[in-house]
Image (cartoon, rainbow, N blue to C red; front, side, top):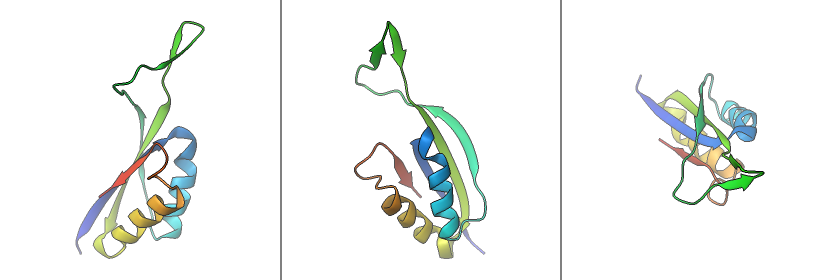
Length: 89
């Protein structure tokens, strides 16, 4: 059996929803890492403190037969094209 890796980088508050979507599409496990994005744009400052949104990095190792379905489900359900997230294989 051959496998593929699907990686989803989403806002921390979307972590559980992403896992649920992947689970419905056939994923059975995930590795979750905490992340912090650094962009080229200046960050928001609130009372002199810089606000940086936390991110979750979700790594799914899936059989090739369901990897594309899981990836497409995550992208479609979370509307990652219009929001601040990324999913790739």
